[in-house]
Length: 129
Image (cartoon, rainbow, N blue to C red; front, side):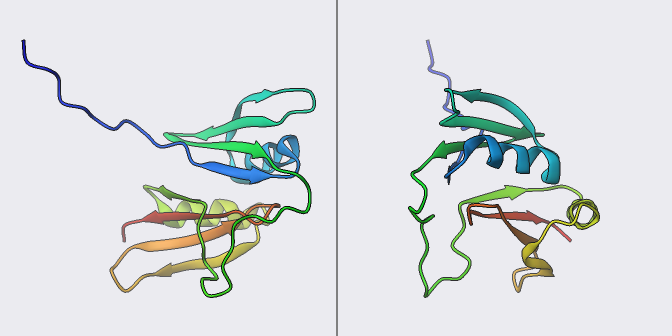
């Protein structure tokens, strides 16, 4: 019997938040994600999902910073590949989302933009031209 070759199915990055419920609400109301679950009372862990993208939201103590590096202003917490990047950018713009980096074409040809969530996590959305 031949073993089936492994296949990576998806990734679920961990984002850190001082208020998991508020963070999940941001992803749902502003970015169109659905809240899959919240765990704990008050919630200390949750997950949001949109299409094939899932983000895990994990509680950290208030005041503990999201990982950052002053030498790297775009230190990403997650990258999400998108079909229809321009339409998604317009959707977010119409909801008043503040962009860390607006829609642009990278030198390697990808179209990208970056959103900062309320805790400072940077999420890159990337698609083809």
